[in-house]
Image 1 (tube, one colour):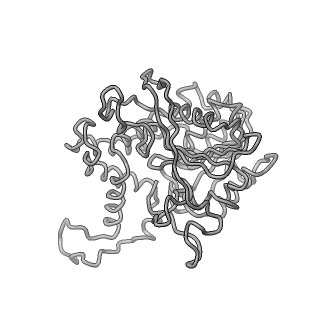
Image 2: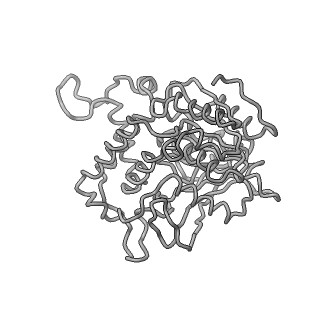
Image 3: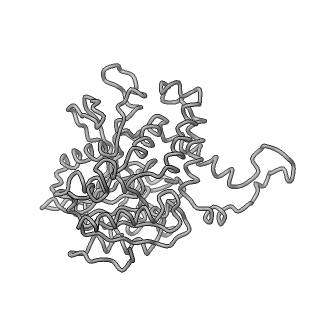
Length: 398
C-alpha cells in the first residue's frame, strides 16, 4: 500500500479535520488480552495488545458494526486525523465518514492494527515479558487466521453482537473472507477488494526478494536490533520493490515518464540519481523505514505467502461452505499483483458453494492500489452493498 494517496479535503477556510464528511480528530486505543493466546503454529504468548480506532456509535442492538481490515503496510488509522497538524488523514479517509460510502452516521466502524504488526499491536518489536527484550524472530509466526481470531476477541470486548460487514483490500480482503469462514453466524456481509484466495508464485517471489533484502542487510543481525536501528537499507529496498507491484506501468508513466531530475547530469554516464521515478521510489523507501518494523515486514509477508484457502480446506468451494454472509468481490483491471481473474475466482467459488455472491470489476489504470484511490464508482458500489436492506445481484458480469 502506498504512502502518498491521501489528499487533504475541505475548503481553505475550513480546518482539514473539520471538513464536511470527515470524522475529525480521533485517538487510538489499546485492547489488552491478558490470557494465553495460541497461534495456528501451536506456539503461545501470554497475552497481546491490539491498537485500534473506532468511528461512529454502536447501536442498541449491537449489530451495526463494520470491521475495516488493512493491507500489508497499513494500520489501525483508517479515517480522521490524530492532530490538526497531521499531513495526512487515515488511509481510507476518502471512504469512511459521515455521509460517505461507509457512513459513520449509520455504522460503528472498527479498525485494528494486526497481530504481528508494529503500530501499537503486539509483534516482533514488542517486549517479551519473559525476557524483558524485544521478541525479534522468537515471536511466533503469524497467519491470517491468527489475525482474525485476535480481532474477534477485540470485537467481543467492544460488545459487538454481529458484524453488519467486514471490508478489506489486498491482505485486508483475505482477512475479510476468513472472518466469514471462521465466524459465519457473526459475519453478515463481506466486501473483499483486490484480493485472492492464495498468492501466485510471482507474488511469493516478490515477497521473498523483499525478505532477502532485509535479511542480507548486516544490520538485521538475525532479527536482533534496537528500535532506532536495524536493517534500514534492506527494508527501504524491500519497500521500493514492493511499491512497484502496487501501481501500474500506465500510472507510473503518466506520473513520471522519463522525466529527469533538475540537477541530473545530462547525458553523462553516472550512477547518481537522474530520473524522477528514482527519486520517488527512494522517498517511498525512506518514509517507510520511519514507521515500519523490518521483522514485522518479514512476518506479515510470510503470512500472505502461507494464505491458501484451497489447500487449507481442500478446495475454494469447501473453504466457503460455512459462509452465511452476502459477499461482494471487487477486482481492478490494471491490478497485476492480485489480478481480476483471481478475484473473479473467489466469487465463482462462492456461487458454486451455493452462497449469495457478486463480482464487480472496475476499469482503472492505477494498479493494485486502486481500492485506496478516489473513485465515485467504487463509492457507489460500497454504499449500495452496505445499505441495501435486501441484497440483489449487481449488474456486473462474472
